[in-house]
Amino acid sequence: MRDVWASVHTHHVRTNGSPKDDTRIIRLLDSLHLAGYPYSIHTLGKRKFEEHWGISIKDEIAKLAARYEASLAQRRRPTPAGGKE
Image 1 (cartoon, rainbow, N blue to C red):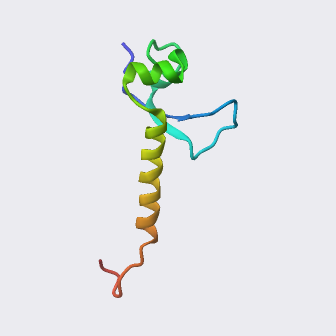
Image 2 (cartoon, helix red, strand yellow):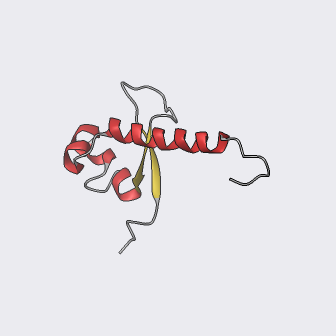
């Protein structure tokens, strides 16, 4: 049997046929992303996927964006004199 936990995919969330936008993404296991799996986003569609898994894609986008922004802020933080924190 194939290992369904093998990889994580980036799913670009589009609205009304908009182009891919790297600021509107969620991370999904391949079995939750790819068509051909019964409970994937490409099989169920966004609304049914949210209902089945009990999530809000909009909230997941916001969480990932906040983590990304926090990581950027951490990298931008000035290092104290002497190079140690």
